[in-house]
Length: 383
Image 1 (cartoon, rainbow, N blue to C red):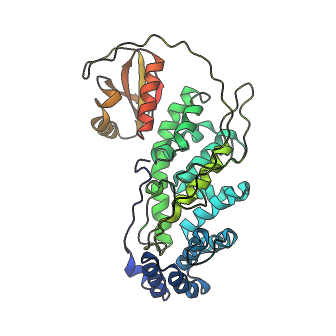
Image 2 (image 1 turned 180 degrees about the horizontal axis):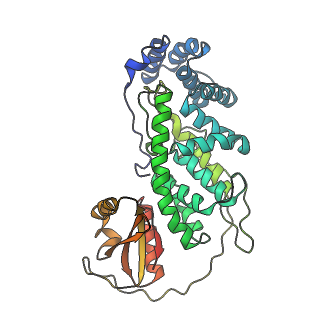
Image 3 (image 1 turned 30 degrees about the vertical axis):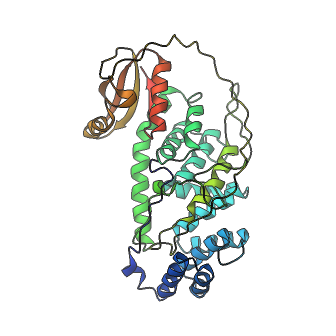
């Protein structure tokens, strides 16, 4: 995340490839009509190709039914069309179908789609899958993977991810949080490779990365970018307070879908600019009791550029290529909360851990880490 709520649209990239399909002319005519605000004509142009099985046209019809443009809103019809396009290999249709299933409470049926979308780097799916791994209800309990998935979703700009990470910090042991940082790198590389190969296999010439599809409010179906409705709470490990779970997850789904209305004509056939939906009710969550920690008296803020001494550090990442650690430090070192902090590059097996050090207390280091996470930089506190 951090093109926050920002949509990147590709014009008609890949037109030459799509032109080989007989139905493309009608699909493009529908795109042009949609862009001009003539939704009824757009739908009329897409009906024929959709009836003949064109996946882009089917997907566009699903979007029209979901948003109520050119046709009356019909979420059941939209869901059926997403399923049909997904069965024909339309990846964005598969992503939306999984989110709609989850939103409808068909969570187990949705999980294969959620897992596949997360594997392609979709931050909404990464969020839901991470919650599932944390709770151990819809996916095997795996706190390391859960923390890594939420870190990726947070890095893509998904608003629900950051508070979820902060709550996970209360439960996930430090060693697992550290290991998750290495897993983040591998998962991101795997997602990039998977997305590229699947797009090529689907004969799609261009696509908008999932990270850029997170945006602020839009129509009204699911959340990406996302505040929404509660689903149900999930139990946490015995003798620990209850953690936020699928209540916020489902809410997240709802808001996420609202933001998926903008699609690339090169791949989906139409760009959807959506109306802002009415404010969704905020989920009711139970307060989490946390161990109260006596906070040491705050020390005066250090002058910029002055080296601080202290045993507490913040790990910024773990890299298989040491030069990448240097690259990250050159980009963020010495700035903001890292001003005056020392750089540590620590070998750890085949990885190089990058840390910033110099905080006098764990609370001070955690405060800096929270600020870094808010800016999209994953981190964990250590010493």
